[in-house]
Image (tube, rainbow, N blue to C red):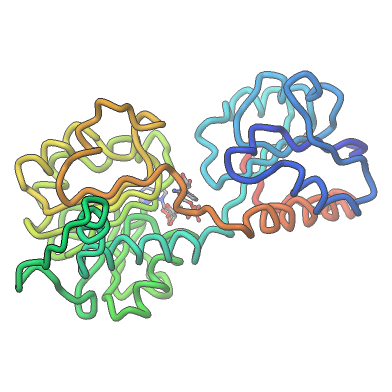
Length: 307
Ligand code: NDP
């Protein structure tokens, strides 16, 4: 197809200003502009966060997220629309956020921040703090996110193991388990960290059995997708002290409903699906778009093509 007009859909506003990306791509040999829903049909391609029915009328849609579970693959395929995603860019960004969660738990920073809100000088018990060095983290998903998490945690002296569909080794992971051995994989870890995409296979993969198999002093982290975890089972595990705590960036319902018990549970850190937010986000997405515009010109297969 011919690429004459590429629209940056205004839904990306939730992650970065759409005009920043449009400006970044302004030197491409095509018309690039910010578009609302009404202007989708006039484009050949769109860069977006959310899905719109009208995207089935364009030739190519690029997701600014790695997770593409919000797009109807079957309809894209039927209507010959190419879908590409942004996997490959979030490795250290999310890795540093996860390191932040773990350091908060180990060094009690979340307690101090909470106390500070109340102007309360309250030192922790002598045995509350611990050090990350020498602990084990089991990371579910060994792709871009998982590898970034492994790299950052590895530099803090954490021993990192991984879980993927096969037990094939991955650089940065001391041991890799196949999903079939998930319960064995999580059993010895002080931290269990989900970096999985949401698929038919991963939906509710982390359930009551997984929390039961974890150490009682273990912390659970989810930076993948909310529905990979049975959230009711997670809340049960936290309330019954089957596990020690959790840091959660993604939820079954987003925004996390005001009545969710997760807001107020001890040893739970809630962040609003922003583990990958950085001022560089639009540039990294722009580089992928630029690469694919050039591949289209030279007739090569698209980079990060999903459909
Ligand atoms: P990748 O495709 O690079 O990695 C996905 C990993 O998941 C692979 O290691 C794959 O391993 C593994 N996997 C897939 N299905 C299964 C399964 N059934 N059992 C076990 N392992 C499985 O994606 P990214 O790392 O870039 O992103 C992963 C997800 O993280 C995204 O889909 C998105 O939902 C989420 N995300 C969240 C962000 C946030 O802000 N919180 C930011 C970016 C991404 P293998 O193929 O070897 O089985």
